[in-house]
Structures are given as C-alpha cells and as structure tokens.
Amino acid sequence: MTQISTTDNPNWWREAIIYQVYPRSFLDTDGDGVGDLAGVTEKLDYIASLGVDIVWLSPFFKSPMADFGYDIEDYCDVDPLFGDLADFDRMVAKAHGLGLKIMIDQVMSHTSDTHKWFVESRANRDNPKSDWYVWADPLPDGNPPNNWLSVFGGSSWQWDTRRKQYYLHNFLVSQPQLNFHNPLVQQAHLDAQRFWLERGVDGVRMDACVFHFHDRQLRSNPPALVRDTSTVTDVNPYGMQAHLYDKTQPENIAFLERVRAQLNEFGAVSIGEISSDDALAQMSEYTEGGNKLHMAYSFNLLTPVFNAAHVRRQVEEFNERVKDGWASWSVGNHDAIRVATRWGGANPAPGFTKLVLAMQLSLKGTPCLYQGDELGLSEADVPYELLQDPYGKTFWPEFKGRDGCRTPMPWTADAPHAGFTDGAPWLPVDAAHIKAAVDLQDRDHDSMLNFQRRFIALRRATPQLTRGEIAFFDAPEPILALRRNLVGHVSVLAAFNLSDTEVSFDWPATDGAAQMQVDGLPGSAQQGRVTLPPYGAWFGTLPADR
View 1 (cartoon, one colour):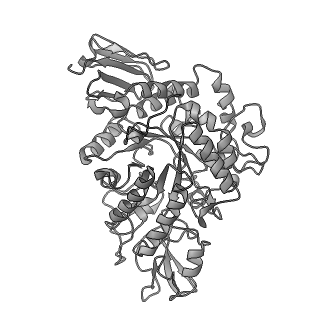
View 2 (tube, one colour):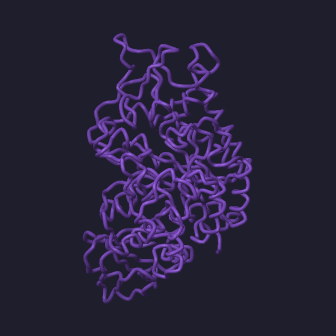
C-alpha cells in the first residue's frame, strides 16, 4: 500500500485518515477478556490493509479503570491489563515498519483520585501539591461554591473531609480536575507528553481539551438559551447550562501553543476533542494560525441529526470561521451510538454504511474512523446487568451509556466470542456482529470492509478529495451535492442520497461530466439530471473551468 509522504509534505496529516482503536475491545491475547497492546500489534497488518495512516489508541495507561482508562493513575506507564512498556515499544516498531503512525490519547484535564499527585494534594492545604487541583471553600450554608455540573451527572463539586473543601470534577467523582492555572501542572503534562514522544509516538489526541482551565472567580454558569444536545442527551441537566466559566477559558490558547511547540520538535501531530456550546467556533480558534492544535473534531456529526442541511452547515460554518485551521470529521467513536444505528435505524438498509463512509471521506478535512465501523457494525444491545459504563448506569434507562459501541471486535465468525478472546469478554459479543466478522467480509467482494478498502484507495488516488476546496450545490433534501476543486486538476462532483427512497434532481453542472467508477455506489447522471437509488451516490469529473 502506498503511504503518504511526510518528508516533503509538512501538511501530510491533512491528507491522512485516522483509525481509532479502543484497545479493551480490539483483541485479547492473554485470555483475561480485555484487549491488550499485543492484540493491537497482532492486528496492525489488518489495520494497514484498510489504507489508513494514523492509529489512535484510546488510553492504555495505568488506571483503576473507573472510566476505563480515562482516569489515569500514572501518565508514564502501561496498565498491566494492556501489557507493559516493552509491549508498547514492539507495537510502535511494527506500526512504523508498516508505514503506520501511532497516536496516543492524552487525558490532561483530570486524573484518577488514586494518582499520587491527588493523594498528596488532598492530604492537607499546605503541601507542595495543594493547589495542583481545583479546591474551593463551601458557601456559608455549606453548599458548593457555584452551580457547575458534571457531564456524568450531579454537581461537579465533591466534598473532601481531609481538607474540608470541595474539589472540582467535570466527569466522575473519582476524576478530580487539575488546576492548569498552576504552571507546574502544565509542565508536568508537557514532561509526560515528551516521555511518549521520545518513545516514538507520532501524535496525540487531546481528550476533553476544552476543560483544561476554569474561571478563577468560580462564577456560576447562566442558563442555556438553547439546550445543548450535541455532547449530552436531553435527559442530562448538563445541557441546561451555558458553559461560560467551567471550560473554554482564554488561558487555554497559550497552553496549546506550548503543546504545539513541543510536538513540532518531534514532527508529531495533534487532534483535539471539542465539546463546547459553540464547537465550530472552538474548533476554529484552536486550529487557526498553525501554532495550536493541528486539527480538531466535535460531536456535531456524532448526534442523531442526519440530513443534508446539517452536514453541509457543519462544513460551511467551519470554513467560514477558520482562516487556515483544519477540521477532522468523525461520525463514530467510543462515546457515540454506532453510526449504523444512530443514523440508519434499528435495521439499517444494505448499502447505508457505504453511503455514509463515502460522504464522510468526501468532505474537506481529515476523516477519523472508529474500529468496527468498517464492518458496518450496529449498536450492540447490552443488558443492564452486564452494563459497565458508569455514565450509562446513572442515566439508565433513557440513556444506556457507551457500552453499546464498545463491545468486542468480531474477527472470526465460528470461533468462541468471534475470536476476540479465549476467556470471558469484559462486554458480550453481540450476536448480530458475528455475522459481520472480519473473516466473512474479507472474502466477500461486496462487503462493507472491502468497499471501505476500495474507497480509501480511490480517495488516496484522487487529490481533489484530500486537498481540494469544497463547495456545495443547492440540492433538495435528502441530497448532499458537492464539488471539490484543486488547482491543476479536474473538478470532482459528488451527490449523496441520504434517504431510503430513489431520488432524481437537476444538477446542470453534471451535463457532460465523466462518471467516476465507484464500485458499490450505484447512481447515474444524464443530461444534467442525477438519479440516485436509496442510499446511492454518484461521482463525476468536470474540467475546472466549467
């Protein structure tokens, strides 16, 4: 497979494709029911066969696993569940040998309450790390200092009997918030990041990066004028506040500039997770100028909203707001209901996931793909008694948490637990997923897996889809029609039918266009009229001056 050149192309990451691995659910090699780094190493050839460039690994650091690795106890060590540093080094070496880059998940805003920093900080009010976390006195009536809420439910303040103060936690009670106003905290994180960069890491995904700083005055948030349902469901009161003071503070800009300067030393790249009231504005602010994040993604395409107007609005508004920043468009990850179910319904139509992938990879930006979506996996139904996610347990039954998108990868249809483990899996393998196992799809030309491989190869061979400018055509719902233009190349036109019924519409620019052969996406254009079957798409080329 031809890899993107990084030596003569400083912006290679704009043409790249990211593939997210959730290690707990990828492949278990030691029979404990939890995936591990050796399992990732074993399947790197498979990942390379997809045609992707960057492998983003969800956290594998030492952790009590209250939030499955997003509660870190030691930033510079591997949790024994996943292996050890030698396993990590072997994984990096093999990935680099295959032309793949490794991106780790940096969780900077908070630690586990078992981290040695917090153990020291909470001991008393006058130890060297007493202000490494966000501590506050109670109000005169004993209540927390303000109205800030936790994403995972309830107040974001927890009373601590040792210091007789509240500490801030934006997520679980066991995930205390670090105080980034303390420069020693910032430097500690930069030192931890350098540890991994020196081990050969090629990039970092920055988790919850809008949460680094808080308002020093601890002002209460006002009510939201429009309720946020992009980052939380409507059963969560977190969306009822306008989050002006508990995140997205201006001091974060200078810290991100420090992160970028260090990444530049190693030629490493970054992607930030943006979950804010105006995510597109934050994506723009955090990526423009070439001195902060390389790229950022939001939850705006991870919501249940699926129509052409919504997709077009996200791309156009970002492009309008940003000068030279860059977006990463993601339709699936470890925090969202699988896209096949979220947008396709309980029984997604044949070809639906192919349509979604082609659309995602045709937008201007770096695509981020989630493990299992290349198989078209649906959201797994995990019964309450097997539920692991504390977020889901809090908001059950209206919100079932994130376990449904985190169930094990099905590798071999006729093996126990679909080849994921020889033991008892930490989450059950969904019966429907066994029919979509990798070994079955691998030998089926028309499978989602092989379609993804072909379309990624097409994208790599079509620079207009990676580097070209984007413009949208005013087509009726449910049609998303766009044009990608790149100097020195013909224009690429594309139309996507986001519905389960056949649609025809007039697009005069297609008259005389040469149809591109995209195996697996039926559609046609004749005399300026495009006809698309259910969840079909059409691609064509046209001289740039037309």
